[in-house]
Image (tube, rainbow, N blue to C red; front, side, top):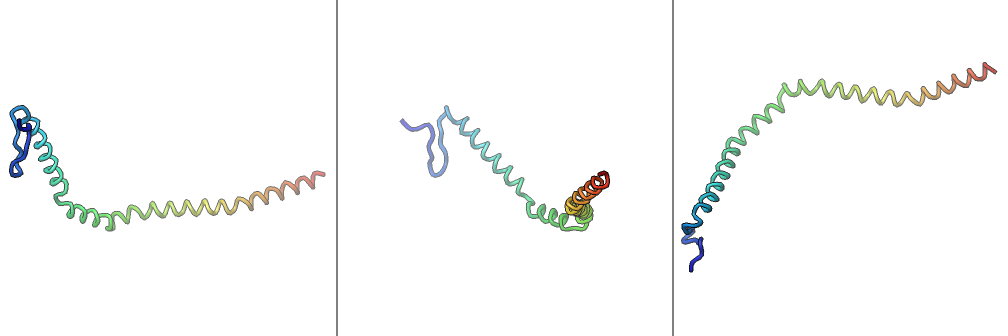
Length: 103
């Protein structure tokens, strides 16, 4: 008795009961290979176009204002944080003076 599937000179030979399953499996593999080839077709060209766009003036002109605004906000936060201890000292001083004058 021979197995239902075997290879002869690299060719799959199958019986009547299993030929449809084998055909479906082979079809799926062919579709996957075709999809992979289609996706990778022109990949280098697409990467070059994307690089040119990202390295171009259009993106720079869009990103620069965002970076400038973010940098300004960071500077404002840093300035406020550096002034906070001074404000606390000034408030404490005013509080002490008002306490001394009210006595």
